[in-house]
Each structure stands twice: as C-alpha cells, then as structure tokens.
Length: 427
Image (tube, rainbow, N blue to C red; front, side, top):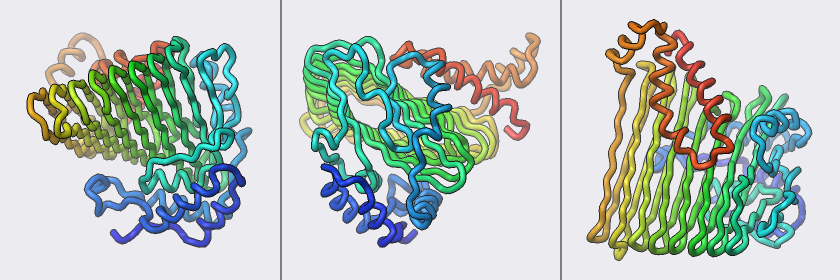
C-alpha cells in the first residue's frame, strides 16, 4: 500500500482554526511530522493485519466538510446513562472537549488542569500521536501528589456523537503519580449516532518511585464507529501498575499499549478481553520494555470471536542488556464461535540478558463439544450452554479487573455482548 495521507491544505486549515493557546507551536511541529509520514500502512510489520484506509476515508470526508465539531450537549444523554450505573467521580470529555469534572470534590492530593493552563505541550512522537497532537484542542493533566492515597476511582469518560455527517475527535490525557502515591482510574469510551466516526486517543501515565495505579479501560463504542488508542506507561523503582482493558464494541479498533520499566522491582500486571462479532476488527498490540532488573511483567489476554470478524493480538516483551532478574510472562487464548472468525496471534520475546525467567504462549480453539453436550444433557438449550461456556472463558479477566467499582457494570455489558454472539444464528 502506498502512503496513506490526508489532504494537505484541508488539514492545515483545520489545525489553523483550533484555539490559539499554548499548544499552537506543538501542533505545527506535529502536523509537519504527520504530513511527512501519513497513517501507518499494512507495509509495516506492526500494522500488517490492520488496514486504516476506512479511518483515512472518514478523516478526509470530515476535513472536506469543513472539519465540523459536534457539541458536547449532543452526547449528554449517553453521559448520564453511564454515570447512573457507575457511581464514581467522572471527568467528561464530550466530542473532544473537556466539559465537566476538572474540579472533583474532595480531591486533596490531586490536581487536575488542562494542557493550556499549564503551558504543557504533549510529546510522544508516533504517526497517530502526531495526528492527535496536531488536531488537539486541549489536553488534560492529572497530578497525584506524593504519598497521597485515593481509594475512590477517578473516571475519564470519553463520549462522541456523529449524527448527520462524519466526525473526528482527538483526546489526550497525561497522568502523573508522584513518589509513594496510590490511585485508581477508569477510562471509558462510548459513542452514539449513525454517521461514521473516528476517535483518536492518547493516554500517558508516569509512575514515580513506589507509586501504584489500578487502571481499567472500557471500550464500548457503537458498532459503526472506529477508534485508535495509544497508552504509554513508564515505571520507576518499586512502582506497580495493574491494568485491564476490555474491547466490547466498535467496527475497527486498534490499541497500542507501550510500557517502559525503568526502575528495579517494578511490577506490571496486564489483562485484556476482546469480544468481536460480525464486521468487527479489534487489534491489540502490547510492548513491555524491561530496561533494568529485577522486575516483573505479566500479560494475559483472551478473545471471544463470533460471526465474520477478525482480531489481532501481538504481545511483546523485550529484556534489554543488563536487565538480569527479569520475570516476564505472556499468554493469549482465543475462543472461536464461528468458522468465519479469524485471529492473528503473535507472542514475542526478545531477550538480551542472562538470568531471566520468561515464557509465552497462545491458543486458539472452539467450544468443546463434550462440554457442550454435558451442559445440554443437564437441560440447557444450545444457546444457554454456549453462553455458559463463553462466560466461563472470559470470567478470569473480568474477575481479576483491579477496580471493584466497575465490576458489576463490566459483567453486565460482557454478558450482553456474549448473549448477542451466541444468539446470532450465523455464529
């Protein structure tokens, strides 16, 4: 595939019309990099299974229509639905605009501000991160102060709407945890509307020495919408991240999770569940860099696929020279409910140090006929039996989600997705 680009003039115009604030110079630098490289294409090894042509098409049509921005009010109903079922403190970003929650009550030891207020310009160069930085109206900076402990989760609610014409939104959040601090975060992506929509998000977490974070990402977009998402996490000595990601919606979804271990005795625990049905494409790429040792990382991802869909999982752990004492494990298991479902799984280990403990593995299979027969012989019909088996398959990821406040809601939406898959006569 040749370079996948956007119209130069229309993109420059869209960038020029953004608010004149502290991000202006950074936008121009990011724009220049994106115009030079364009979208990643399937010619790149990390993107060989994920074609962004449809995302480029949505973006082009959005630019040609004048790069319209939907109001945050258009998604207020969806926002209230989520708030009603998950009772935590939410910061709401509607159609790319930070609209509510930046002054959370009772937030001692916690500072929340916009990039423009802090005169902070986002870094992290990558083609999609550059597109994000070029078109970003403003970003959000969350600062957890040293030795402060926050048991009540803080939610980041991203809701987009596209009713009558294509929509594109960019969101960016930087979370900084100082030494010895502890906090919990829920990141939730949802959308409404019938028109095509592309959401491009970047979230960065920086954990200082001894900091600890629990993090749950829920992607529950409408079936016709697309999203690319990049999470970058850096850890210093004795810090810990417990991270779970759930992909339960969207037509085309790509997640990149980059974790950099820069301090000894750091711990990384990553879990993920993706459920895909007809017409969906969900791609999860994970890269964990062990730069020093000893340190520990674990990855466990599970996928449930029905109908005609395709999922991708690429889990990579890199043990850099000198990172002796590294313990890195990764596993990926997939359950196919349809002969037309496809999974491309690639576990990778790159080891450049001695005295390490590393393992990886992946499995792909279908529902066990003997188990299905057993449940049906006990009085369950086929759909109920399939639902029980698929529920059990995904239960380990849901049950190990590190934030109890979202457990019931996660169970509900996972159950709803599994019901839809098992009731599909073509699954």
